[in-house]
Image 1 (cartoon, helix red, strand yellow):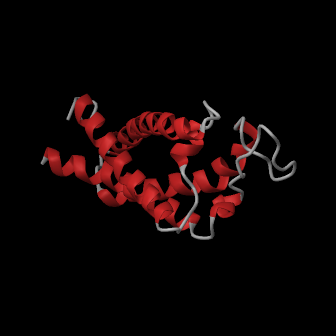
Image 2: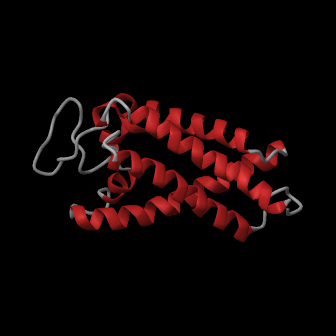
Length: 166
């Protein structure tokens, strides 16, 4: 630990990547099993390109970068509380997931250049379906799979670094 109570920089990078990979595995696994149609990396990629194949690759790059950035916020929270535990991380992940489902996804059509809105529908440019409240347009299990992925992300960030530092 550093004097500020944060893990060393490279440890944060490794665990941020591990947490992002774990969360992505849960979310993409849920999509592959037909539990949800939500793909956050695909949605991120389509911000930058209309080419759907390229969007997946570009989206994963930005998704991993976003996972790292959020990991630093989690680590700052853990350090400010002086507590690194899997259950605190999972609780923070659940809160993060609730915010994403209730606020982030419904706002996405107003920010995303290729997403239709609930009110205007699809056009030649805006072809992506809007997620709707809690992502329910992408399947009724989307909120549960999203919360599970976010909880895993937080649990990895809260628990595994502590085990590695012990």
